[in-house]
Image (cartoon, rainbow, N blue to C red):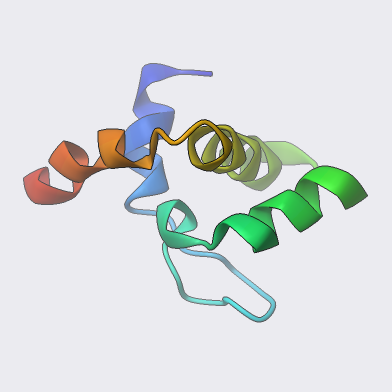
Length: 71
């Protein structure tokens, strides 16, 4: 993980699927858990989804709040 990945969670949107257009950091936990079970997509998107899952799973999503305010 790179430090800027946290900022990207509140700026990059989901490019496809049921939650297309929603910020990666705002994706619901069950959706992220589904990706965790089925496999994250390759590349940058998969990295961000995996990071979002870890934050959600460990109750750390509030860490993104200060980054949202900076936008």
